[in-house]
Amino acid sequence: MADIDNKDQAEIDPADMEDVEEVEEEETGEDENSKARQLTVQMMQNPQILAALQERLDGLNGSPSGYMESLPKIVKRRVNALKNLQVKCAHIEAKFYEEVHELERKYAALYQPLFDKRSDIVKAAYEPTDEECEWKADEEEELTVSKQDEMKEKAKLEEEKKDEEKEDPKGIPEFWLTVFKNVDLLSDMLQEHDEPILKHLQDIKVKFSDPGEPMSFTLEFHFEPNDFFTNTVLTKTYKMRSEPDESDPFSFDGPEIMCCTGCAIEWTKGKNVTLKTIKKKQKHKGRGTVRTVTKTVPNDSFFNFFTPPEVPENGELDEDSEAVLAADFEIGHFIRERIVPRAVLYFTGEAIEDDDDDYDEEGEEADDEEGEEEADEENDPEYDPKV
Image 1 (tube, rainbow, N blue to C red):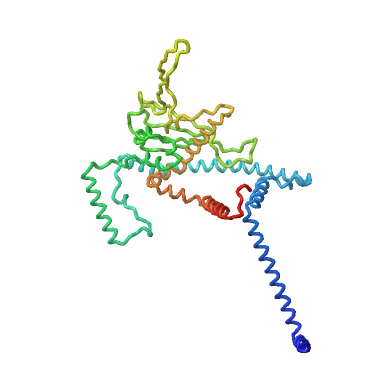
Image 2 (image 1 turned 120 degrees about the vertical axis):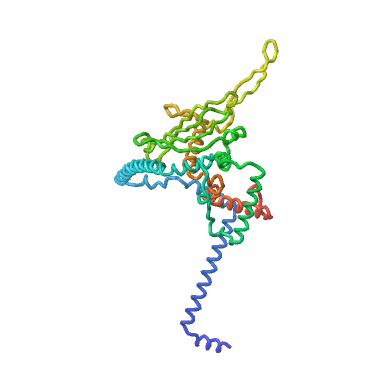
C-alpha cells in the first residue's frame, strides 16, 4: 500500500503541487476576509461601539489638525500672504454682487410690464383674450382628442350652471390671500382677523434703489379702497450691504440685509388689528374696592410686518429683537425672490411642490432606519436598555 502511495506521489507534477498550494492560500485568504467582514458587521451593530465612534467623530469635526502649528515660521508667513489675497478676493466678490444688483434693476424694468398685466387681470382691470387663456398641458398630461372634447363639454356645462346660480366673479378673487395661505412662511403670520383685509390686496411690487444710491429694495403692497385703513400702498424697505466686514472679512457670502423700515398705517377708528383692548380688574389695597381698567395691548397680526424693531446706531439688539429681525429679513427676501416673480404658481400650489422637491428625504429614511434598529434591539433577548 505504501508502494502504491509513493508511486502516486511520484507521478504528480510539481507544478500541480504549486497550484494546489495557491488554491489553499486563496481559500485561506477568503476565509480571513470573510471573518473580518463578519466581525466589522457585528461591531457596527453594537450600539456602544457606534456611540463611541460617533463621539470620536464629533470631537474631530471642525477641530484643527494641528498641522498649521507645526509649520515652520517661513511657511506661516506665506500662508498669511494667501489670506491677504483671500481678503482681496472678498472685495472683488462684493463688487460682483453690486453689479448683479444693477442687473436685477435692469431686468426688473423688463419684468414689470408683465407683472402689471398680471395685476390688471387679478383686479379685473383687464380681461385676457381666448388666445391668452389657452394653456397647453405637458405631453404626459395630454389626453386623447375625444377625451379632451368630452371634458371640455362637461366643463362648459358646469360653468354655464354656475353662471346661472351666481354672478360672474371679477378678476381672480382672493388671489394674494390664497398665495399667503399656501406658503407656510407667510401663513404662520396670518391671523383670522387679517384675512378680510388681505382680500383687498391687489398687487405686490418690488422697487430697487436708484443707480448711485446705497443698495436696497422696497416691497410695495397695493390695496384697493377698504374700510380698514386709508393707505392705498403699504411699504417695507430693506437696506443691504455688499462689502466684507473688516473684523471678519472671510465671513462674506454676498449681500446682507442690514436693517429695514416700515410705514405708518392710517387705521380707521376701531379697525386696527395690531392692537386689542383687554379689561383687567384691580383691587384697592386699603379700601378693598374693585375697579375694571381697560388697557390697549399689542395683538398678533400680519400687519405688524410693517413696524419692525428699530436697529440702534450701535447695532446691538436684545435676543428677542434679533430673532424678530432675522425672521423679518427671511420673509422680505422670500417675497422679493420667490413670491413676486412666481405668484401664480404659489396660487395654484405648483411652486410649493417644486420647493418640496428641493429637499431630499434622508432625514425621514434615517428616522425609519433608527426605528427599525430600536425595534431589533428590543426583540433581542440579550439587549439591556440600561447599557
